[in-house]
Every structure is written in C-alpha cells, then in structure tokens.
Image (tube, rainbow, N blue to C red; front, side):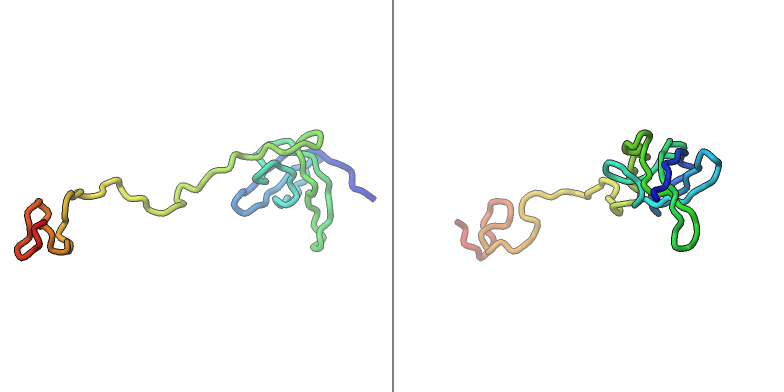
Length: 125
C-alpha cells in the first residue's frame, strides 16, 4: 500500500550535515535526509519552504519524510549554496615584496656581470 502524499513546510535544514525537519500540516515534525529531496543540483531545503512528501517508518520505528518535492511534485527551491568563507586557505595580503630586474646574482656562465660588462676572467662576447 502506497503512503498518501502530505503537505508541510521545512522547519529547519542543515546543508552541511544533510538533514533537517519538516513540519506536516497536522503539526508533527518529521526527519528528512537530503537523499530524499527532489532538487536540481544541490539537495537542501529553505526554512519555511512548502513541500510535499510521504511518511515512512524507519528501521528504528521513527517516522520520516521520504520522496520530498516542491508543490505539485516539482523540484524544491532550497537555499542557495554558500561557499565557506574559510575555504581555500591563506591567500596573502597582496604584498609580493620587491621585484628585481636583470641578473640577481646567480651563475651566468661567466659571460657578463648583469650590467652588460664582461665579468672578470669571463669571455666578454
């Protein structure tokens, strides 16, 4: 026997953890996991978003929302995906230090001293 489609709204949803709760029209709160959400792209719910779902009893005996959709079976809207401010590590303060031109003192094969002049004992080409 297939469960009847119910309506409700998202009470809260934690996108990082991938779960939250839906409040059904009768006032009961139901667990919802992101794998049960019909969405385009990232699966999550926005607080207060209207949803439709079926109720299923899990292995632990608790009721949960499954087959969660937007109104009329459409995709849920969800919250826009935010990137963590702390991701990517330190990028520096933009100060790259002094920049040097010419020969900065490395080995040059004895051809010149970086100023266009032959190095002492060099070839002088």
